[in-house]
Image (cartoon, rainbow, N blue to C red; front, side, top):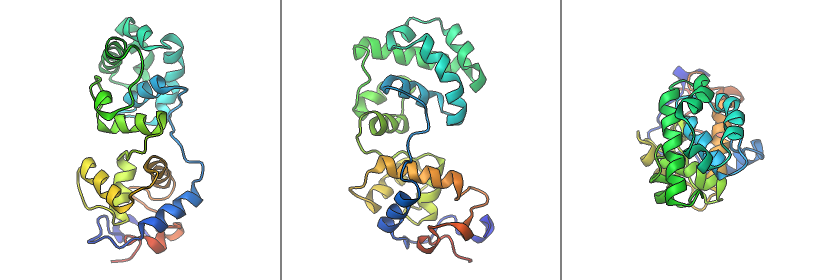
Length: 220
């Protein structure tokens, strides 16, 4: 079944969210954040860098970056040109280096070098929006949070959980469909399924374990 044969935005919620979540848990029991990190600061840096590129590419530059600047204070006092040289393979290196240094300065000055756990405090940092804040909350601090990336947004629509167009509205619809879930790991599993099976242009509906539960895995 190809992309032309599926409904990209079902007219109503017809999937069974709890069963979908249970199936995803069986399919991807070990799903986790793909950004390599050892602490909250490293995850914050990697997540900021992941904008407009892939996690895999970010993981190729962060070992050198973390070795050079292991703490917020180290990065806050770094030369931006040196940071830019390390992150150059990701593109937009000057913008990225400025963001990272400003974020590190804010951490050092406002939070004594500690990454905060609340969304409001995280969003006060340069380069950090709601999506990045949720990644940190969920993966560094164990606070369940819904992160709507391109995969999560696409699957939420195909599964009939949301017909919304903005990440915030999709996030709220997922929360309504699956209250009380461990939203962090749910999002990791949706991302895995999006990468492996439910592709944007050619979803593999014929071999998808979610097909019996998915309103979009039907011929119009």
